[in-house]
Image 1 (spheres, each protein chain N blue to C red):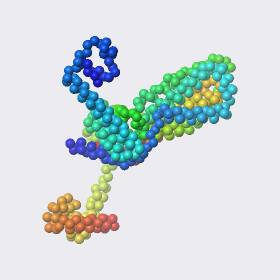
Image 2: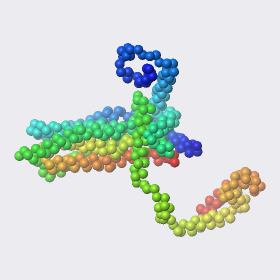
Image 3: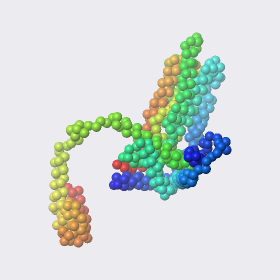
Image 4: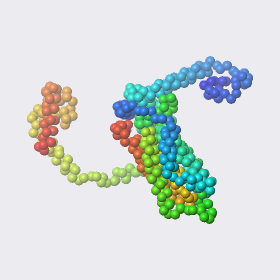
Length: 230
Length: 235
């Protein structure tokens, strides 16, 4: 970028040769600094882009480390493109995942002599537009009716399910009751009561190691008894 | 904060899946080169068919009806442009507007065929196709389009079309136009109204079948990869 008299012109767009304009006012120091900053950022961007292209070329050859580094760097770029396209914050991650999958699936179509960042941005834009279309189609089909949803009968509801569940619970309770007392205690405290190992140890006055061994044996015995229908 | 960390870990999980799934790939040739490869296969088919075709009859017909050149040029240009468009559309960064590329040539093909059809009505003594000949045309276009479409779809599947149905539709147009162009080798009469209608039906069958079946093939290629199945969702 060049700054002339405060006007910002992209390189190569100067409408005529500077000598024919007449006097060009020397840019003030803050503008020169800004120009240097812009050049610095552009140089950094170009460097990053070259690095990404090299990573992608390595990924095409099967280099997993380069691929991982590249995909991680892609995420902020994709998010920025999606945000610019007007994707809502809760959907941006869907675009990220779609684009990462597209990169993976289409990695053989990338030509390393071209800018990777430009390639990625175009794909991110297309995926973002696709998602917006999907959302629009979905919104056109769906209606917001919370009362209807609440009042809708559950067709999959099975009146016998409660009975079956009670039977299964009874079978577990019988199997648990048939365990030796130490094992039953360990299963009761650690699994059913969801206590921590330290809590259970304090409560039962046993060591943590003993509780762990009893829990392991108790669960194994339970599994065996329930599997054999006992 | 929690949501962000959940989503970030979902991305990390996906990246790990993709890295695990990574295998070396051969870089694809530019779409124009791949399009030329398919067109070379069509030209090879044309040469093979020309060996058994009645070329002097074709020459006489083209001299008698110069507008036939326009129809043949139109169908050939449609095939060529649709092929380039299909290969461009198979790239993930291609704009959908590539699909418009073959339209001018297709328009020229339709108009020139229509003119030939009108002449068959107004010029006495023009040989018009009977029902059997029309049926042969239908079988020829559809029959030749099947292997051409299959080859084209196999080549397109190697890329990554983001709009598989549109890509398949243009691929169908390309195959149908190529088959209709090659039909001229065995078509010693003008396109009368019935014949033209049969051509339109044959081309439409090929395009619709491509969009339905090949579109699904191209979609399957994208969504049923092992990675997609294992893809963790962010929400």
